Length: 135
Image 1 (cartoon, rainbow, N blue to C red):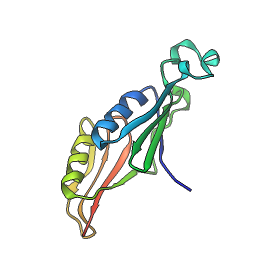
Image 2: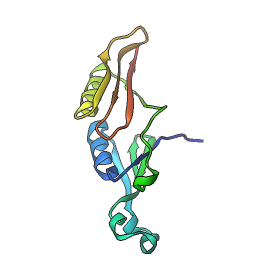
Image 3: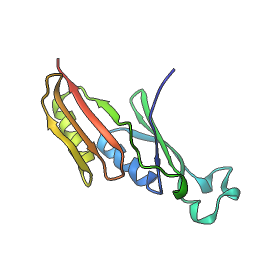
Image 4: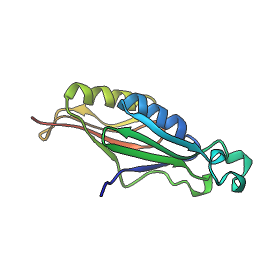
């Protein structure tokens, strides 16, 4: 069994996934709009350029997502995407990249459990925990 986060957006999925690809060093391996899908005929024209499904590969892990109709969108709460990073320098780099245009909740710092740890909500509303554990 593999567990991966699936993020929802209200029209910003493509921009968010391109941002995550740059920040995290992953690769977008799938991105399909509603208009490119077999559901194109059932989709109102204004939504056809929205993302039905996107997949970002981060090594063996995946983050998936898509745009939902505005009336179905709910602001993320009660969870965070947790990234465990191998080096303190990489943790700081990723944290700073994701924080651009977002809101820092806990600044990146050393803690009793980690070389570096920080919390933020990015400009797309996704909450993140960035951690580099102690050696």
